[in-house]
Amino acid sequence: MFSITSRLRFNRIFKPVNETHCRYRVVLGSAGSGKSVNVAQDFILKLSDTKYTGANLLVIRKSEGTNRYSTFAELQAVIFRMCGEYWEDFWIINSSRLMITSKITGNSIIFRGVNDKKQREKLKSITFPKGKLVWVWIEEATELEEADIDIIDDRLRGELSNPYLYYQITMTFNPVSALHWIKRKYWDVVDPDVFTHRSTYLDNKFIDAAYYSRMERRRNDDPEGFKVYGLGEWGETSGMILSNYVVEDFDTDIGNFDAARYGQDFGYNHANAILDVRFKDDVIYIASEIYCYEKLVDEIIRMAEQRNYDRSRIMHCDSASPEPIKKWIACGWNAHGVFKDSGCVMSQIDYLKQHKIIVHPSCTNTLKEMSQWRWKKDEKTGLYTDNPIEFFDDAMAALRYSVEDFRRIKTINKPNQVKARRA
Figure 1 (cartoon, rainbow, N blue to C red):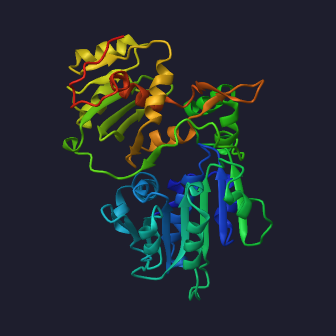
Figure 2: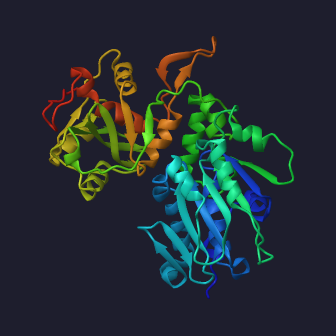
Figure 3: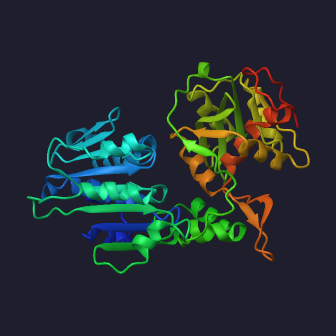
């Protein structure tokens, strides 16, 4: 077999993470620290090593559907990087069942959620074709309840015939609230069974220059958020703008909805975001996203065409950028600049807060922004203002634009029956 490790890149800071055999591996980090990539690489290497024959991995997200677009995609990408065009000689990747199996060892990876009682019960009956469940990776662990972890922990028991195997639960997450139960139960304790690790984007030697610049800008624009998402410090979740959203896999067929709009926020160095937003029975659905950096308008239009986005559907855009709107219109798209008047941002946010929002798990960037979108805090009083922090909010701007005509008329019409205002 050809050398595979040379195809992977590791940050030295994660060496102790990959070497520990502690039962609880608690990996806290800022956005962009590389923690999840490292864990994915670590698992793929171990599962394909005959030394660890008999090991199997269970990957957990709160919502089962989010695994497909996050952990499954990350582990699959590691295999492709590691094995290149020969990956099928060494791995079986079942995209429909979400299962990955090493042809060398027979070790497997499966993916589950803990969003409801039925999913939790399924965890108690997990079996593998070969070997035992010995490793668990919980991504975005702060989304889970303490009882969820206890159910998973109870599954790791029994004698292991291979002396190289060991039971271990790996938790990766941004630190969020200092009141979170993970901090109390794992981070603040001195326990030989618990290994803790902190990393930031500054530790990631492979981070791209554009991302580094964005994080540095956040240091000034959002000091409070920077502590959590830039420095990996335990923070607070108060001041969040939206809490009325859930992540669910749903049928995106256009016939299932009363109305549909696109919202677009233009960007180049910061993200250009397009959201495919649907409406049904007073519920807002975010069905898909286009989220990219350093792309020209023509390139983004081609991306929309490749995704089979509907040119005739109303697309509400940021009216502060008239030139891109003209290009979209010239290419046959029904693009309009939103009419911005005094208080429109607050009115859009109020409209969003009055409706349940269901986000498709494929919209990973939208979910990241939504979970961090907060009100500005007055530095003198320490109180939150009525102004959102204008950072890492490109998808949120697109979401605000998408509801523009509905929040003005307060009713939902059939697709494309509402005439959008021009800026």
